[in-house]
Image 1: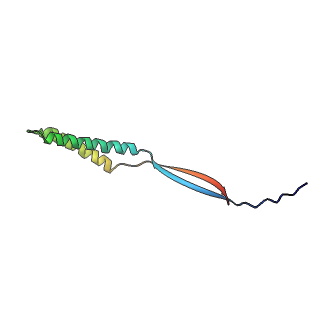
Image 2: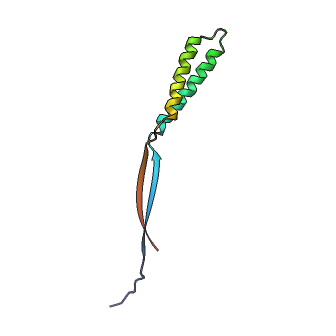
Image 3: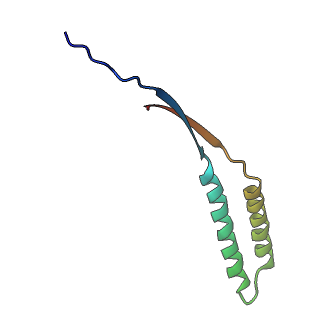
Length: 87
């Protein structure tokens, strides 16, 4: 019978925490729609006789979109992974 000497090994536990914003696409949509409203307003303003009521309606919609973007609440997801390594 042969004796084998094993080396002592320390096991180290490492915890990794990652975060991601779950609802970021909602904010992107709000911003994209606000950009579209700005483009429409600019197009209306280039007309010889710009329709003030339409521009006012678009401006109010833009104002609401920007308020929604400013007050947007992010939903953050956390994930934890634990790995074990030997030294």
